[in-house]
Each structure stands twice: as structure tokens, then as C-alpha cells.
Amino acid sequence: MLEVKDMVVAYGRVNAVKGISFSVEKGQIVTMLGTNGAGKSTTLRALSGLLPLVSGEIWFEGQRLDGVPAHKIVERGIAQSPEGRRLFRQMSVEDNLKLGAFSRKDASGVKSDMDRVYDLFPVLGERRSEAAGLFSGGEQQMLAIGRAMMSRPTLLMLDEPSMGLSPIMTQTIMRTIRELQADGVTILLVEQNAQAALSLADRGYVLEVGHIMFSDTGRNLLGDDRVRRTYLGAD
Amino acid sequence: MELFFQQLINGLSLGSLYALIAVGYTVVYGIVQLINFAHGEIFMIGAFGAYATWMVLGQPTDWSAPLSILVLLPVMIIGGIIASVTVALLTERLAYRPLRNAPRLAPLISAIGVSVFLQEFVRLFYGRIPGFPDAKSAIPFPVVHGISGEIIQLGGVTIQMSAVFTVGALVVCTVFLWFFVNRTKTGRAMVATSQDPDTARLMGINVDRVIMAAFAVGAGLAAIAGVAHGLSYGNIGFRMGFLAGLKAFTAAVLGGIGNINGAVVGGLVLGVTEAMATTFIPGQFGSSAWKDVWAFVLLILVLVFRPQGLLGAKVVDRA
Ligand SMILES: Nc1ncnc2c1ncn2[C@@H]1O[C@H](COP(=O)(O)OP(=O)(O)O)[C@@H](O)[C@H]1O
Ligand SMILES: [Mg+2]
Image 1: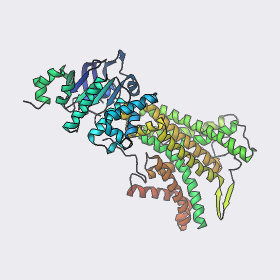
Image 2 (image 1 turned 120 degrees about the vertical axis):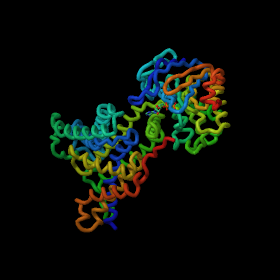
Image 3 (image 1 turned 60 degrees about the horizontal axis):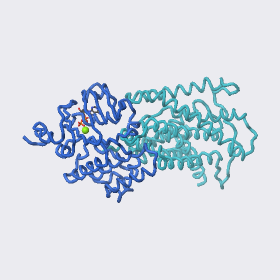
Image 4 (image 1 turned 120 degrees about the horizontal axis):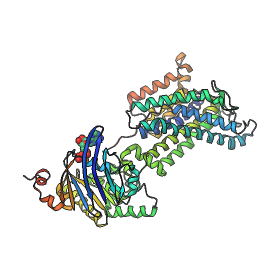
């Protein structure tokens, strides 16, 4: 479904992502792990068209994706819930969701998808006219995910959805991700919480200073010594 | 007391003119953080566009008042809007967009260049159009019967019909802006882009189009202001955008740049302050030569005590 080949992405003259290759198969949950500054967010921003590639290629469902403007990438079926959630905080829950559906023309489909978000996260439905900034961190994360779902993506990219959340809230979010997968959405999950991410993931990639160090199935990575030492706090 | 109301009316009329122009500074700044120094010239182009429309209509001077108000004036306004929006979109495309990722100073200098270019272009070439008057000095604005020179007498207060038009135009435009921002998809996209452009792009918003919409809306209102200026002062000139633009920019900052309501409030406050200062400040300091001084004194006071402007600038919010 998604294939990245030798992708290099830079800020000014400094390369942040230094030639990475990976792929995501349809229906999978793929996770990308790495410490702060490894280049995870940069990778997602490049995939969404917010950053240009220095070199390399991105293929999505048989078509070249690099060079396509960001708003067209959404139309092709890729949505992102960015790091830090980036909600439109003064706007209502409903307006945030409507913006998530910006590229869609089917008003009735948008309405039913909105209801679906409210089913998935009842607290958002109950307080749909309140400003997004008034919600708790976990609720805001729900809204960020719901907003990304509103474009009806086939590939959903989540950048550190568990950031700043309590363990219980993290579990709720991870359960939601599992449900979305069951609905047929392919997921690229960027996380620092390796335990939570790997227990969901079909496949994991470990990123360090702009390079993919290794990759394996989620289960194998959970048992991998290097991963345990660096990301799971074991020694 | 009559004098007070007289000056209030004059101030509101002047302020409405500032406000109509100020909106253009504020919407563009709110989205691309560019102070479009050429916006005063877009206002000037609007006035010249309206004049050109009048020429194309065959310079009608004897239309009845109802026909002038209901047909001539709207057509001239539309002509002015077409001219100013076209020029604004061209400058965005040619002078600002290529510099969007350049350091902040580059588009600012580009804007000053556009400003000079547009003034000189009108000065040198307007008269070259066959039949058109030379624009090297001021041109008398077409008479719109029923408005130009007409007054309403309300007790001891004289209200120019052109003032009624200017204030009315601001009211209509404010309602239009509210509807546009809150009820249209492009308006919502504009708000989203001003709050967080990258996230707006992740929503599938075409930010280039939003920026064009911002320039177009600002130019449209400036064109209406250009016509209002022509009706109020009876003439237009290639330099008319300089001081009006500076005042309108002041109004935008006064209200809180980036905030549309702020531009309207800032314009009105500035206009009323100028009108009151020239009347109620005694001695030479109240002479009309000093009115610009008071306008900028007001700006400085507001910036010292309330740097975000009267209504507060766009809240930069990226948690
Ligand atoms: N806007 C930026 N400008 C310059 N450098 C940046 C910017 N954003 C990130 N970087 C740098 O790029 C590298 C990768 O950052 P990032 O992709 O955010 O990492 P991660 O998401 O894995 O924590 C880091 O060294 C970071 O300092
Ligand atoms: Mg990150």
C-alpha cells in the first residue's frame, strides 16, 4: 500500500531523515519507534506533503506520492493526526470534525461519519459545541483521531497519540486504534511508548538519528534485547 | 452639542473609510503575516477602476437620481472591485508567493516595490488609454446624482449623502464578512489557516487558495472604499492610497492586527478621534494640520498600554 524508498528529508541543509526505506501493507498496523529527535515526525510530515523530499520516492497504491501537494494527499486517502494534536482550540468539536472532512463533497456521508466519531467517543458527542481547547488531554487526542478519520482515510498516520496521557487513557486510545484496524483502516503509528505500540503492531521499525536501525514483527521486537534496553527500560 | 454630533458623524464616515481598507491589511496579515504595504494602492486602483467603468458606460452625467443610485453606482462599484481584485491577485501571485519561504523582510520590501510600481503605473499610463484623462494630477470623480453633493439636514447637523453611503457600505460589508467567515467553507478554511497553516493543510485545505481568497476579500472592500472616497472628496489621484493606506494600517494595528472585528473597531475609533481632535482640542494643536498627529498619538498610546490592540490580535495558539 505504502512504500518509501531511500527517503531523505532536510530542514535547511541539515538532513533529519537520512535515507530510510520501509513499507506498510494494507490492513496492517505498522509502528515506528524512536527516541526524541529520531526523525519520526519528520517522516510523517514528509508523507503528508508538508515537507519536500531531498531525494528518494514515496509510492502509495501504485502512484507516486512525493511532490503531490498536501491537500491532494488527503484526497488520495492519507490522513494524519499530528504530534501534539494541533486542534483548532477555539473552535468547537463539531467545527474541528467538519474541517477534517474539508475535502469531501458528500454531506450525508460526512454527517454519518461524524455520528460514528460520536459513537466511538461519546464524550465528544455530548459536548460537541464546546471549544476543543476545553477538553482534557485524552479527550483532545480522541478528537484529533476523530478529526483525521473524517476524511475517510485508507491510511491513518498517528504521531505519538499517547503523549502526555495516563496509562488508562493510553489503553483507551490503543483500543480505538485496534477498532479502526478492524474497520479496514491501515495504520502507521509513531510512538515513544514502545510497549503499547508493539503489542498492537503487525510490524515495527526502529528509527535512530534519521536511520532505520532494524525492523521486525511487533511480537519479535517486544522480545528483542535492543528494544527492551532502549525503549522498555529493561536492562 | 450639535458640534459634537456633527463631528461624530464626520468621524464615523471617515472611520468607515479606514475600516473598509483596514480589513484588507488584517486578513492578509492574519494568514501570511505579511504587511501588504501595497494595499493602499489596491484601494486607489479600485477608485480608478470605478472611474474607468464610468468612462466605458459613456460618461453618463444626466441619469436620474434613482437610476444613478440603483444602476450606475453598483456597476461602478463592480468595475472597481474587478480592477482591484485582479491587481491584488496578480501581485500576490507575482510579488509575494515566490517569496513565501523567504525571510520576512523580503516580501515586505517586495510590497513597497509593488506600491511604488502601481502608483507610477497609474500616473504614467492611465491617460494613455484613449479618451481617458491624464492621471498625473487629481481627476474629478463622476457625479452620482442623489449622492454626490447631496445632504440631509437633521436639526443643526448636516449629513452628507456620501457619508451615509460610506457608513452603509461598512455595515453591509461587516455583515458580509461575518457570514463569509462563519458560514462558508472558504471562510472556515481561512480561520483554520490563520490559526495553524500546517494543520490546515493536513485537513485538505488548499492554503494557496485561502491566501488568494484573503487578498480578494481585502481588495474588494478596498475598492468599495475607493468609490466612497471618490464620492466624499469629489476627486481621485494616483497618490490617494498612501495616506489612506497608512491610516487604515494604523486602524488595523489599533484594533489588533489579524482580527477582522478589530479592523472595523480600529477604523471607527481612529476616524472619530481625528474628527474630535480637530474640533475640541484648542489652539493650533486642534488645527487640521495636527489631525494626523493625533491619529498616531492614539496609535502609540494604544500600543504602549495594550500592545495586542483594542480587540486583541489573533491568538497564536499551537499547544
Ligand atoms: N522545524 C524544524 N527545523 C529544524 N530542525 C528540525 C525541525 N523539526 C525537527 N527538527 C530536527 O529534526 C530532527 C528530527 O526531528 P523529529 O522528526 O521531530 O523527531 P521525532 O519526531 O522522532 O522526535 C531533530 O534533530 C530535530 O531537532
Ligand atoms: Mg515527533
